[in-house]
Each structure stands twice: as C-alpha cells, then as structure tokens.
Length: 401
Image (cartoon, rainbow, N blue to C red; front, side, top):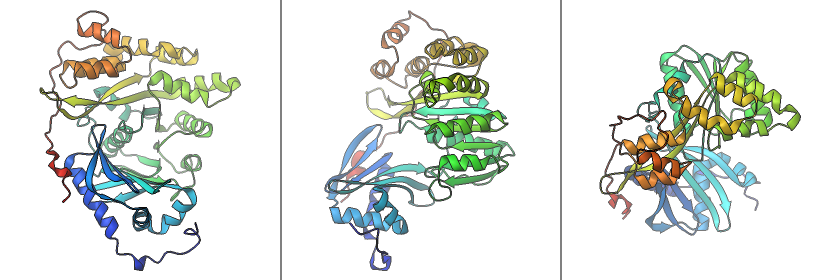
C-alpha cells in the first residue's frame, strides 16, 4: 500500500461520505446513543445504554471506508496508513463533537465515533457523590478517576476541571490523547495539549508542564512507570494532579501504580503515594429502568477513596486488600464508599433493579442480605428517596429512509 507515499489531492473529493456519516451521527444523537460503529462490509451500528443495535440501510464498502477516512482525517490520513490506527476529534457542529478511532481490519477500515457533548455537565447533574466536590478544593496532591472504557471517566474529570475553572483563579494544563471536552478560559487560564499534535508524549508534556507555572495538571491517562513517577513528583511539589487508569476499584488502582516499579522500588513508591493521594473515584455504569422494566438510561455506581490516616497506613504497609473495609467503615465520617454501598443506594432509590444490583455487586451475597434487612448497613442511608431520570426515546429514529 503506497497511500502514505503520495500527497492526496482533496480537491477531487466531494465529501459526500462524510456528510452521510454526519446524518447517522445526527440520528444517533436524537436516539440518545453514545457510540457509532462504522465497519467496511457491514451494517452501521450504534450503542445505547450499553447495547449495540443495528441501523438499517447502508452497508459501507471497503473503498468507501477508506474514502471516509480520507475525508475526515484529511492531511492526517498518511499517519493513519503508517500507524494502522489513529485517534482524532470530529466536530459535528458547535454543540457536539466526537472522539474517533480509525483502524484497519481484514475487510477495510473501521471507525468508532464516541459522542462528546460540548456542554460539560456539572458533578451534580452527573449524580456524583457530594464528597467529590472536596477534591476541587485541594491545593496539591493526586486524584485518580478510574474504571473500564466507556464508564464516564472523561466526563467526571471534565466536570471537575470545569468547576475549578468557574470557581478558582488558577493555571490549568491538560495533556490528552486526543482532547475531548473543550474548556474555555473563565476564571482560570486553561492550556489543553493533544498528544501527537501539541506534544510528543504524556511523559514529555508532563515533564515540561513542571516548568510552565501550573497549579493543576490533568494527565489523560497514566500508561507507564515514568509517567507515574512524574505525576507523583508533580503532586509532591505543590501541584494538584488529576489522571485516569483502567482499573476496577481503589485497591486495584494502588496495586497497579505500584506494580509499574521493580520490587526494590515499590516501598518508596508506596510511601510517596500515601503522601500525595487525595482521592480515587472508580465508576461503573449500570442500566436504569422504569416501572415496566424498560431500560431508560445509565447511572454510575461510584466507589470513592478519601485520604485518611488509615488509608495511608494500608498503602504503606501493602495491605491493599483491606482498603474496601476501610472505605465502608469511613462512610459516615469521611464520606468514602464502596461499590456495594453505592449500588445499594441506587437500588433503594429505585434507580436500578435488584437483578442489576446483584449482577454488578462485588459481593452479591452480602448485598442480598442488606436488601433483606440483614448484614452490614454501615454507611448506608435509610432514607433514600431520589428517583432516577426516565426519558422515553422513540426508537423510530432508527429509520434512515
């Protein structure tokens, strides 16, 4: 393939495929979907509430899939051909944009468009626990937002940064791959840098950031040992650092960070981490249902670690397995919480079904006891009355005729 060897003359393109995909994106937005999947030689599909459904109609050919990539990537298409996968942002209109990943597969090119609303929701609108607002007030330290892909980590971080931007007078530097939510300067000055376009790597940008007079640094993702070291150093030298990891809970997050280092350095890392960690927020998106059992959306079950003397001690001594018990015990005083505490609250509020709650629980048997009025209820509210949102979406938007 010599596509990366020659200059593409875009004056020869009518961009009709890009416009056709924009029509699909418009329908997906109206339907309330989150991701559009485009695959050569296959039906276009969309994800909503965690499930992928087909859009009837157009099956994009191999040649069309390559042309679509050219029309969206333009001058960056040669990088895509060279690297075989490529991340970018596709602006649909002033209100919506999409994070897009193009990649080659056996039948041609595939692409996944992830919806990024321009309007950044507040932490309250996102139904985040009140304690997360306390991380906005920190002057230094490390705050991590973790969870599986698609669990809402970027949205939570965007809401935190937006709140700081509206209420503080700081210099914020974000290092992202790619930039998703756009922050305009409000009370703060916000410099957003995209890996590959504005900087060569997370590591180089984070190292440079320490010389750029930041108050707050957002690192889109921690991927290696050097980035961990730089993040810990930045947090220890008076900066507030936010980042993400693909980890399942707080104890797994601590273990993952430490495991980047050889055994003879792990105690040093644990001591450093115990000194700077301010919080860990881990999310799992669960389907919400109405009275008839129809899925109406998704809500995040959230585990929250808040730095305490007990947490510091457990981290230093490598007793990560005891962290969930410490979070549960600290709910009333420190407002920390485990996943099962969060899931139980959502169940009591009527936001999720019993089946969903038990399927998502860390310990289904313990949670079922709580539901029956037995077992531990430490930190569990007895008076939860808030109901989840239930917005009916007419599924006839699938009709693309």
